[in-house]
Image 1 (cartoon, helix red, strand yellow):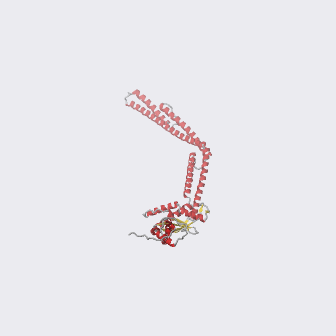
Image 2 (cartoon, rainbow, N blue to C red):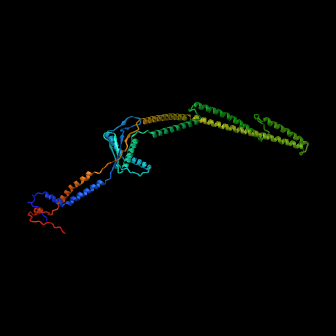
Image 3 (spheres, helix red, strand yellow):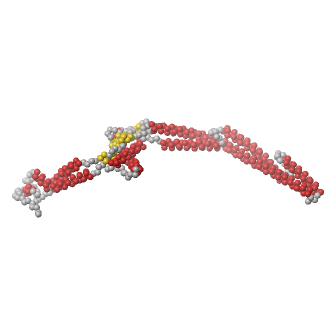
Length: 451
C-alpha cells in the first residue's frame, strides 16, 4: 500500500520500536558495511609490510668564507642556514652523487644495484642546534643503513666541495707556467738579438761597434792590396809560361833557379850546335847533346808551371780571405746602421723581462700564502656526529585502528539504513497503514513462509 500521511496523523511521534524495526528491516545494509569495513581495515593493517628507518646525525659548520686570504665569514640567520642545509641534503645533486657512490661500492662488493627513492629520504633539524638528521626508509633494514650512510657521505662531500674555499692550485700552476714560458721566450729573443749584434755581454755599445767596423775596414784594405799584388804576380807568371823568353820577376823566390836552368839550356844549345857541325845527326855525341837540351827545356817548363800554380793558389787564398774580411766589414756596418732599432728593442725586452720576473715572484709568494692559509684553517665544514644507526620499524600494526574502524562503520551503516528506509514509500507496518489511511487496523495476517 502506498499513500501520504494526513494532517491528523502527522503529529504522531516515532517510538523506539520504529527505530528497531528499521534496523531489523535494513540489517543486511548495516552488516554489509560493518563486514566490508572490518575486512578492509584488517587486511590493510595486517598485510601492510613493516617499513624500517635508519637515521644519522651531522653537525653543520655555518658560514661561508669569501676569500682564501681573508678571515671574514658570511653567515645567515639560524633558520635560513639550517633550512638551506635541509634542502641541500635533499637536492637532486646530492642524491645523484649518493647514487653514484652507492653503485660504485656495491659493484666492488659484487652486490645488486639499489635505486635511491628520493621520497624515502628525510632531513630534519635536531631541535635548536646546528645538527641535522638524515634518515632513509625501506622495507629492508640493511638497505636503510647503507643508503642513509651514502646520502650523508654525499652531502658531506658536496658541501666540502662547494662551501670550502679550495686552494687554487690549477690557477697558480697555469699562471706560473704562462709567465715562465713568456719570460723564457723573451730571453731567447734577447739572446738572438745580441748574437745578431755580435755581442755577448748583454749590452750594446756604439763605440765598440764602431771600433770593430774600423778594424774590419783596415783588414779588408790590407787584404785588397795583397790580393792585387798576388794577382799581378800570377798574371806575370802566365806571360812567362806563354813566352819563355820573358823576364822573370825579381820578387819571386824561383828567379835564381829559372835563370840557372836558362843558362844551362843556352850552354847545351851551343854545345849541340858545335857537335852538329862536326858529326852526323845519328852520332851518339849529337844525340846526347840534343837529349840534354830536351831535358833542360822540360825542366824549365815544369819550373814555370809550378810557379804559375803556386801564384794562382796564393792569389785564390788571398781572394777568399778578402771575401771573408769584406763579409765581416759588411756585417759590422749593418750592425752600426741598425744600432738605434736594436738598442730600443733590447731596452724594451729588458723592461718586459723585469716585469715578468716580478710577476712570477709575486705568483710564487701568493701561492705560498694561499697554501699556508689553506693548511691552517679548519678543513671541515660538516662533521659526522653519528653514522646511520640500527634500523627501527617506522610503522607498526595499529590494532586500535582495526578495532575502531568497525565501530565507526556501524554508525555509517545505521545512517545508510535509515536513509535507504526513508527513501522507501511503501507501507510496511499496521501503524504506517493507520497513519497513511487515517483508519484503524482491525486485523493483521502474518506472512506465511513458503515450504
